[in-house]
Length: 212
Ligand SMILES: Nc1nc2c(ncn2[C@@H]2O[C@H](COP(=O)(O)OP(=O)(O)O)[C@@H](O)[C@H]2O)c(=O)[nH]1
Ligand SMILES: Nc1ncnc2c1ncn2[C@@H]1O[C@H](COP(=O)(O)OP(=O)(O)O)[C@@H](O)[C@H]1O
Image (cartoon, rainbow, N blue to C red; front, side, top):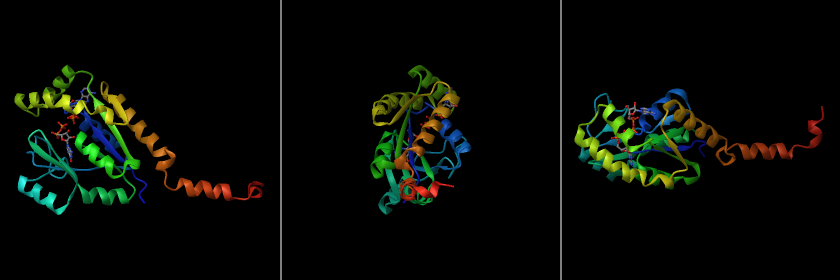
């Protein structure tokens, strides 16, 4: 049985989850990112196998038929999916897996092992600031930005399905808060697999063993 956690990070596009994920991964070696597959084209600076696995619609469909996805869902015009094998292997090693997925992915993954799942939702300080961040990212044409803004309301409507909800106003504070959540979740008694046997052994120890 794995000691790992499945940590889901969702937000409307542009609220900051990719930025937060990068910071977490750089600062915590127990964390592994689940790299998704997508039928979407790579955006500037996105790299194959680092940000996404970029698949043709045909290849994506073949992966579905092979059962290679833990979950998959459409977002805007493209398909996104979580490759099963990498997640299962790293989770079995006891790693905590970080998922940057939308509400559909969050729901599907948390249904697999609810007792080891932590769901975190990131909100922007305002819709105006969300639009400012989407534009400031310089990644998408205006039409796509407007579609992401329209999609944002739909994503936000699922906020209450998450265990933790943060407003990403100050990036350092958000990263600090997510790290605190992960640390506290790791310390929950039900998340420490070896704890029960260890405490039972402690309880079974005859009291004179404590006398020097
Ligand atoms: N269900 C699901 N959603 C995903 C997956 N990978 C990415 N997404 C979501 O797809 C949406 C669009 O991805 P992208 O354009 O890269 O998002 P952005 O960084 O939020 O602008 C985001 O909400 C991602 O969280 C996945 O494997 N499964
Ligand atoms: N707290 C913050 N304050 C200001 N800008 C931020 C903050 N968090 C993220 N950003 C910026 O907003 C833009 C969108 O962030 P990104 O991580 O790409 O969002 P998402 O992955 O949710 O679409 C990026 O340019 C990022 O640098």
